[in-house]
Image 1: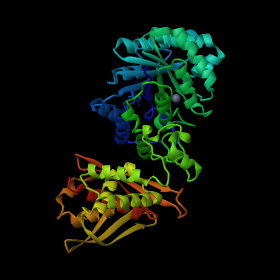
Image 2: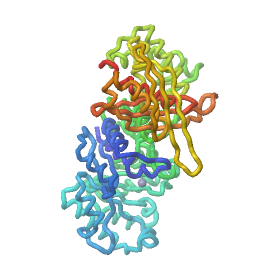
Image 3: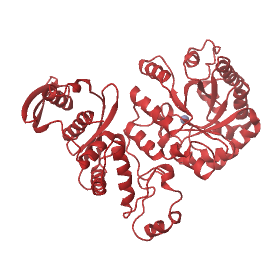
Image 4: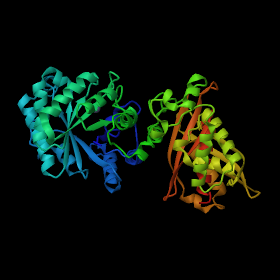
Length: 519
Ligand SMILES: [Zn+2]
């Protein structure tokens, strides 16, 4: 089977999307998730010297990835200096990343109106920059910006640009539909012309944006025309209407076009990965998203459901399990039970038939209220423990109270009071914090720290809040996701309530209790 490679640019192009903001720790989690999925290249951004980027690249250099290769992103040299003397290019080449992706121009309009460079000088900028990276042992990828607009205007010159990169040692030239306005037929034809012009020496890639809602279709058309690398972002994150969605491209390439992209068992984690990335990026998973959406394989009762029960291919374009999704028909709760029992046994719990059925029921109710356990496996395990009867609470709550006081012209002060019992003994503590959750956390820990010295090792590493307004007729609810770490392990918990303090409390208690469960 012929191979097509995936190149994810969530951490560079994807960060242009509205509301996208990730800490270094979250970016590393994205990288890990993409590697687990089997993505071949992960573009990490420009390795500049600003502290956040410097830390990211330093930690990436230490990270051991199973499959993915890290790519650093940069630009071709400036017009008035040599590649050696171009500061930005030097930074990219000195970075540890084995692959270097350089973006350069291929459209006369841009040369004339935006950067004011002659056509010949632009070719020299491309060739010098790629050669500079190649000579220093990097694997250069050339991103031909606005390639399709350039090709529409002047096909000869657009081809000269990618040929300059190929001849200077580029491992791959990627054709970019930067404005996202090209349609699949044109993208396919132009890609075929490039593949024919460049011959076997260099691999051709495709990078599209979704402004005409054709990013996925154009990427697939390019592959049909001979492209063998697809750039995009899992879930289609990106500025304006987004980048090409690799979560749709991957299953199409593999299951429909017969290419070898990732091992089948990795493909079966696609849904989980897509949802996990949404949680990390603080996005709501779009239920109608093809392949991975909650509704992708949901059948209403009636003829569809009956047809699917008789033969799934009657109403489904592929087997949902191939992409890690699930068929949803009201009658198919057995599948849920089996999954839950497997997950319970992974946590060392033995759930009986009856308990598993109750757990499925509880899970459904909770999901309906806005719980989402993919990013909160620790809370899910606690839910199973409660069903299995092997759950030991750390303490018994009598009450808590949080006061937030703002004085005119002054700061905000927060104070929490907590009353709890451990083994019949009553503890009362007051603590101040830089916010209500912080104050509650301190008061609770203060109250029970003597009984549980290991609490001192547990740190809350991330706190995310989302208002779910698409709730089910009950008014908006707040979902809190909390990440915690004890220096060895990391775990995620969740709380949901109409009240943000209550939701935070629930996630906090789960977080601390999880740390004390028997392993
Ligand atoms: Zn782009």
